Length: 96
Image 1 (cartoon, rainbow, N blue to C red):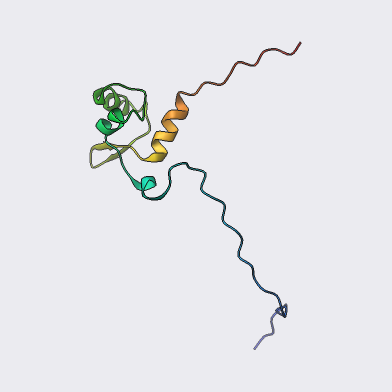
Image 2 (cartoon, rainbow, N blue to C red; image 1 turned 90 degrees about the vertical axis):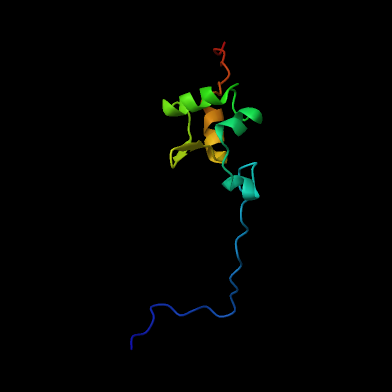
């Protein structure tokens, strides 16, 4: 039998680290929810007015989506990524 290289410390207590909260505003079961293009348009989760336009953009791979079994669905992460696609950064004026 071989000895351990270090001996365990006596009297130390392992304190669990506090968990950082999830950065997503969506929490719980909504993180696992899937939305159809019709629901996305109805709830105005993306800036499109028809489900057909959403589907066509997904077919052309212009939007993040899932194609599970040939059906287009969106997760909360997909919606976040799609909203970042349309974000514009403010113009920085040149320093004087």
